[in-house]
Length: 372
Image (cartoon, rainbow, N blue to C red; front, side, top):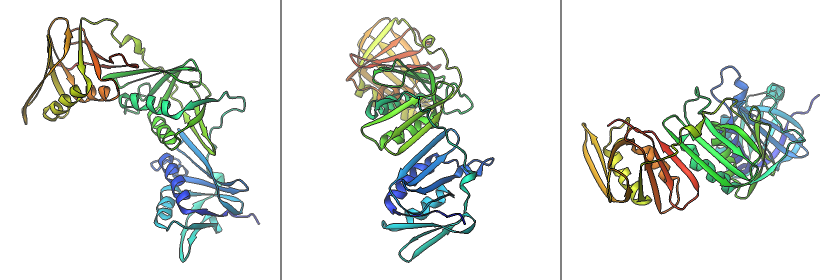
């Protein structure tokens, strides 16, 4: 008779790992209900937990006392709810007939329905010959945070629904756009050597969670633009299926020249934009920027609410200009910068605005104009 899974594990450790698995597991899949499950395998190495939605996959090996080796698939969210409800004490998980399991501690016991481990799909693995690069989590976290906000949320637009990455191995360039604004960051940092690689939005979200729990470094490898991005840290592994599409020619979107340049205090500019946004039309968040020598005037006019007018001192070169922009888009780009002063570059009233830090890192944002 084949042995069924049985192991003991600390409740806090099990709950934390299950939370990461639930984040990846696909609870909406009607074609493959098994994707809503987490695969549990107990052996001499401990407890292996795997979850996937066929786009992002995670696997982690936890310290656990395996009483009997085996595997089972259990609905991830349901198991997490049960485990979280139990006290922070050792749990005994035991396989029962027909792929059920018992979760027991003290005088509390739950019995959960499961599926056989053979029903769970194989997850991608890096080739043994893959070249791994040690990447600092802080640098990777910074690159994601500065570009994530302008990734398109429209999953149908797969060429925009991800972060475009180029890397020489030591210099990383990351670009994102949703068609209304564009963000570009270049930084000196190790990263797998690649070009034309697009990390999908969900992959970015899960990647950000993965490195957030690991303050030091992670190892990364890539199987190419049409393959996967792999991460590993200790006993935790992640794979992300890359978007195999063509990213727009982003360099053509970035204006090469400008006729007008404004230098402003970043903190003050964010503050006046936020106040103006409160009065701007809800759907478009349009604010009018009027720039003249020494001053920037922001006006938000909402027929249902009223009018807001803000004025700040700026350095300005060029002829006066009046143009409309989405206040939220400007705020998000400015919030991704760290310098005290920022530069806003303009051509005409119907041309994009380019935002850059003054004497800062290699970073820029491009925001398309709106009619006023």
